Image 1: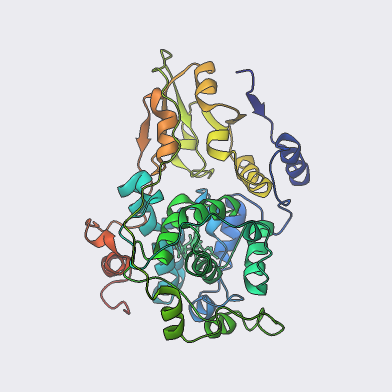
Image 2: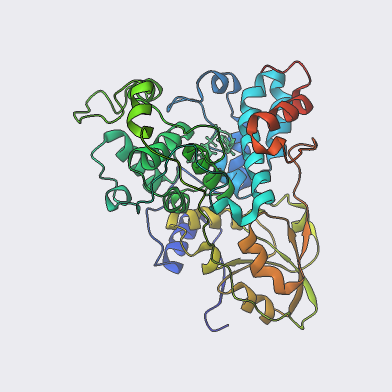
Length: 410
Ligand SMILES: Cc1cc2nc3c(=O)[nH]c(=O)nc-3n(C[C@H](O)[C@H](O)[C@H](O)COP(=O)(O)OP(=O)(O)OC[C@H]3O[C@@H](n4cnc5c(N)ncnc54)[C@H](O)[C@@H]3O)c2cc1C
């Protein structure tokens, strides 16, 4: 275990953020600061201050009352069910629009369970021709010359959070205007997000690209200007590539192009390692179950979390700091940096128990330790057939009835 260390995360927050910066000198990007603090405590505060009426009215606007709960849901500080139960209890039918947005996360997660690493490749044939360009440097550097897109890139790389509508515009710009390979763009985008989640991210990029929907997603200047309150357009002097009607853009972006066949993408997996001869059983805490209220964390067994290059090597500094905030709230969890398998072996672990995950990279890493996977807490009890899983509308037709009864608005 030459390169493995046990971390002693400081409980004082300012100390903690500095400590993580020192421990991960190679981590890129900005400092997390006070705008975001990881952990269940902060997640509950955000949940309790939701303005559900305003959310229903303005969540698709850039300055709308969105909750910014996604990094907390992604890391398991709160479960989708906790959030859904809470808002339905407090606000009844008024919570419907918000719960429908939560349901998107459950929906993508189910598709991820179903397809595994298939989500990294085209799920269906594209409905329009897609490009295969590499991600240009002017995107990585945020110097497209378009104030809106440069603003979204700043949100992404400095804050690690981008509004949902801006994510869609940005993805459409890359995939349909610049003809960048969606898979390369999706990987880069996810790495910068505090809520970076392979299911929600890669499947949303596929949705924009028309790989799990019947048509491509694109937008025009009028729509962007309206939903951003003209924030970027007022002083914009560039020749706007989005300034046209939907019909004209459709003609420009997709005419004379023949859709290609679906593309398959290989995903890195860990090397095979022989089964361990050790016998001790431990709880393996992975990065989707970081809540002190998690049932597995209450068990009287050794609990181990590893910051492993294979899983977290590309995480920017602010995300590692967010992670440290979350880990700081967990009692009795050993926190290591290094190679998961080497650490588990050294600790004499022969078997691990953990929460189930659709992440096949985590599963492949744990495979030598005879893992027992405890099911995740379900967002919905509704049985979802493979057919319903093909499109969100079919899934929501069923789930909305279970959550809100027959009177739900369509
Ligand atoms: C290209 C692209 C990439 C994305 N990548 C991610 C990602 O890596 N991780 C991630 O959590 N979400 C991702 N999303 C979905 C969505 O943009 C974010 O979940 C949402 O913007 C988070 O902000 P919020 O918590 O303020 O959302 P709110 O509007 O307050 O919604 C509450 C919660 O509902 C869930 N949710 C809302 N909209 C969606 C959606 N469209 N898809 C899935 N879940 C949703 C999220 O968990 C969110 O926290 C992506 C969307 C697009 C278009």
